[in-house]
Length: 234
Image (cartoon, rainbow, N blue to C red; front, side, top):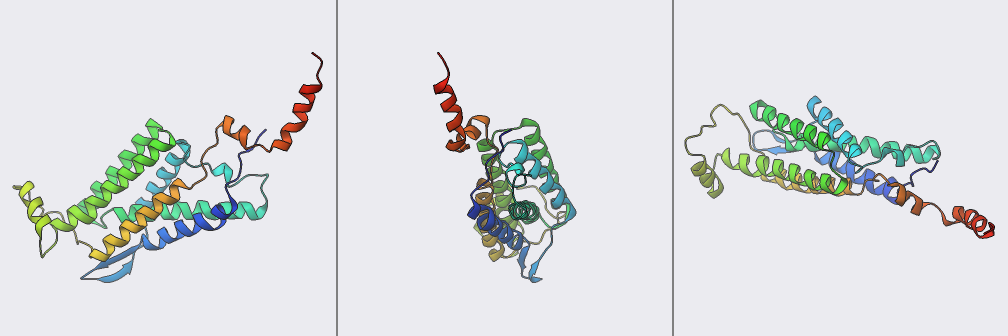
């Protein structure tokens, strides 16, 4: 039985943990005029969404846990792989925490939106490239909604964006939807955090197809079989 090749040691031991731990830290950062700077832990629903996303990544072949945790790897290597798994899960939960309004009806609506899209993606089972594009669109749309559209609509000082959106939504009322817009610094940090997370996801060890697994096999393992073929009678 041929095992999947392990990812590069430097990527597994340093790059991926550093990326996902940074996302975990920055994903809880919030800055608002009324409450100042604070760090929010992910709510329970963010952990559920992270579990769904984890399953979608594995199902689409964008992430292969078997390349990080296997019986033929040393204890140190498996420990390093476990750190990557834990950091990926924590970062995924914090990304959902970052892209979702903190409370109220808007929190419920955006959460249901995430659940339905992840569920649909699980059922569709796209390949790795399509999944990565879908995640970029999903998180990019959520970022625009929270940090541009909602921040402009609920900005007490107003501005050009708020006037344009108010004109487009003429007749609609937002009085029943409570939302506190984040400070501008939160949006910049959220953009950097989201981009860093997507980079980390693209660097995850993906599922290796049988053809590629054969190519990753050491050439030395193929030499005896070649000699046997050459020495076989016609």
